[in-house]
Length: 99
Image (cartoon, rainbow, N blue to C red):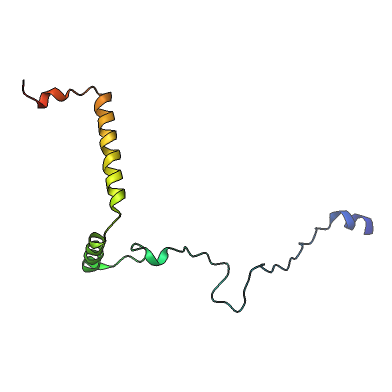
């Protein structure tokens, strides 16, 4: 039996003692918790409940000024795409100008 049990027994799991390299036990919170850095600036992270809260958050989003460069860039991109589509479908612009 001694020789047979040597081949039939299961291997035991190896145990590892894991200690993170940069773990500060005097610090705050869980070192394994991943929290995005920009969560504090997001308006959609904790959405407002109720009609009044949703309306208030929508109005605050409207009041917030965006980057004007992005708006101009988006308008230029949309205009170029519209012109490309009009060129592909062979749109005739002369219908807008009387002869």
